[in-house]
Amino acid sequence: VDLVTKGRHDPCVGIRAVPVGEAMMALVLADHLLLDRGQTGGIRGQIG
Image (cartoon, rainbow, N blue to C red; front, side, top):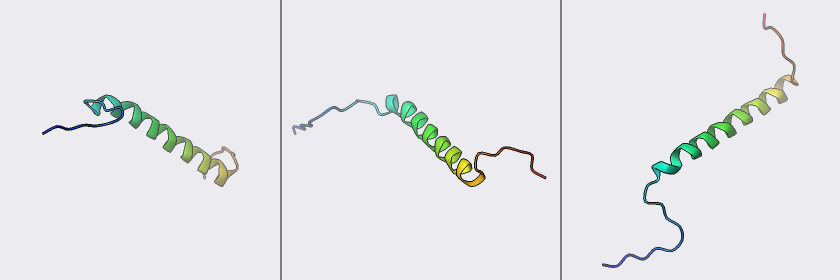
């Protein structure tokens, strides 16, 4: 049985998992920062 693939294929996806996870976390944090700025107008203060 011959298996032919085209394109770039890495033998181990674990090598790419860490950078992908870091990029996803950076996007989530940036998204939450923008949500907070939109809701509070960028005002920082004490609660209570």
